[in-house]
Length: 355
Image 1: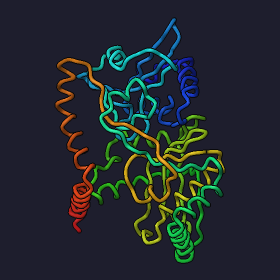
Image 2 (image 1 turned 120 degrees about the vertical axis):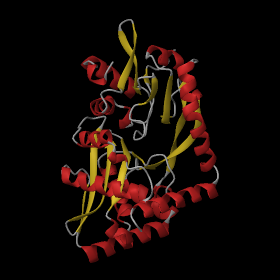
Image 3 (image 1 turned 135 degrees about the vertical axis):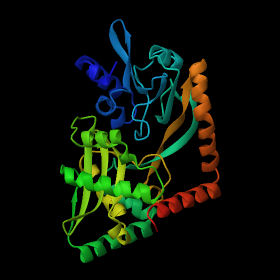
Image 4 (image 1 turned 90 degrees about the vertical axis):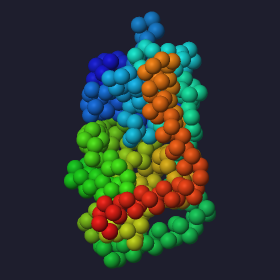
């Protein structure tokens, strides 16, 4: 069914099954995220509902094309993917796909513990996390022990930013839509500057983010965090939170303040505020970045791949996706090639901007 067709009882069952799963309370896995994608992509978003004796025992959020090719709900921006099933439910991936009329289902951030789908994964990746479950002081102490130069340098830049740009003010949960528009403009410019596809140029992603900014639910709420310098936004981040997890999603900063590393300052303040709000973990998301390595305390595991059912439609999906995935994997596994690829993207970005 379409996400908006789920009944109140279905949503309650979804939340209950998820709470009993034992997995981290990722907001991407809550029904509110799927409902928001359903509003942004009504033609594609679907939820397969598994029932037993008339009661829902599983939910499979996904998107589907006219040809029956499926993908994870919000693929391209969702950082935790999979189904929500009753513990011990005996069901196979292909059975789920058949019930939903899908020839294949593609994922790139499948969460660990998804026993139905993990066997179909092609690759496994770390997703760095910051554990603040013991409080901010404990995390700061561990960071000082592990990376004293990093913390000392970041704090010095923070003080210098305050001296030269004006008093710093941090808002953990900013409701002002103008601040969100500023963040999205910075992020679009960053995508173009680095030769990457501008996600916010896709209308459905912009619509989704604006929708989630106003979403308030215990399991999934939009959180816009902003660092102001002299009353002017210097860095911002938009993510999703549950009671215990903050999924870091879209960080960006004003390039005019780049020498002060405002993004790092912002992340430290976010971690402190998250700990004070009872959040135990910040998930920085899959993908290598120096700031993630400096800030993280550990890693979760996520998976990329696809599940296919035998048939012509599945064959067409494999032909279209498997060679691309192999090429990406080949480059990622060779640091020199990965570095050259990044340099090429940066050069493309400079050419686009006439620099």
